[in-house]
Amino acid sequence: MKINKTKIHRIILAVTLLSLVSCSSPQPDTPQKARVGVACYNQSDTYIRQLTDCLRDQFDQLTNDQLDLTMTLRDAAGSQRNQDDQVKELLDAGCSILCVNLADRADPSEIIDLARDHKVPIIFFNREPVAEDLMQWDQLYYVGADAKQAGRMQGELAAAAILSNAQADRNHDGKIQYVVLEGEPGHQDTIIRTEYAVNTLKNMGIQLEKLSCQIANWNRAQAQNRMMQLISQHQNQIELVLANNDDMALGAIDAYKKLNVTESVLPLFFGIDGTDVGLKAVADGELSATVYNYKEAQAASIAKLAVALISGQGIEEIEFKDEKYIYLPHFKVTADHVEKFISYIDTIEDK
Ligand code: BGC
Ligand code: CA
Image (cartoon, rainbow, N blue to C red; front, side, top):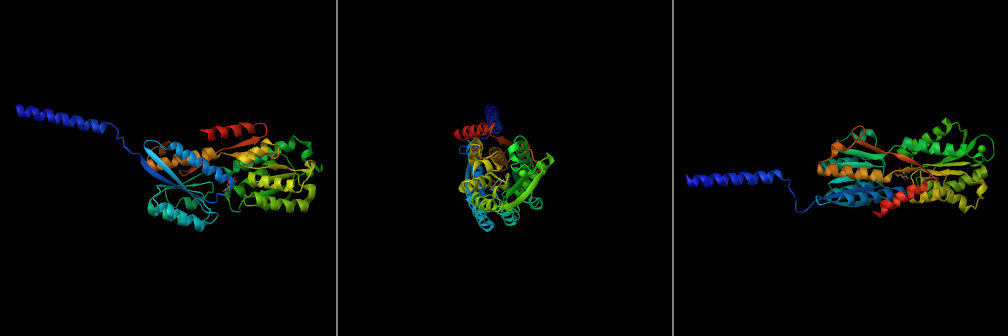
């Protein structure tokens, strides 16, 4: 009888201990380590460099006692073949998630096949694959910005500046003579931004005359070259420069500076991005306005989605468009409130 009582006590004790262990959540001594592979198309691109800096900050901030995130960044220097090789290396090194800024947005198949073989999800960003490619596997996502909104906002900013400034139509012919500096052909932002900016200007009652549209591949030096040619072709006729991004708008300004053109015959310049140099040019009054391409929010969304995919937790809190897409908004930036953007960035960088 006595033995039985002891036995029962032991059993009760064992059951209590067991239930205690299973009720309390397991606390790992060491955090789960996860490697994040980031493949970008070109680190010499100003906007991409700033976006990937934000991404690194975000992964640092999300590192905690449970999850230790290490981000490895690879630069394809514009070549899809380089990027395919880099992705293979990142997967072989044990990355559990890939964030890919495609070199050629029309050619992601190799990367998708590699990732699927390794069962590693991909978050594409900034350079949007076509919808059919994103449908190839259910572990493919895209984070970016709405190109239509960027173009529309640029058009509205340009229209407002023209309508409030009688000198914008310098030759007083009732029309605005304009040139466009475009990003890479085939990039979703190039085609759509130009179309929406020009149509918005027209819809807002501005009479336009297109003098030229030149491709400068997002690049400041190329834009300067193109603009030098345009200035020599059209002399003082150009009244408006619409650039698909800030770097190209700044390249156009560089061309006028290099040629020492007097201020009274300068056109109005508009960019998109709100890079550090772009915001400074707005503050200095050189760039009439820009459209803020919200890199901090894009980076935060990429990082949050990456952690959800790695940990298997929190994905239901994330809002997608068509189950795969996340688009972040833009903001208009003029000299009136550019300081707010500059101090916002300073605070984030000080953190
Ligand atoms: C940015 C450009 C950048 C390009 C790269 C665009 O969204 O506005 O500045 O060069 O992305 O893909
Ligand atoms: Ca005119």
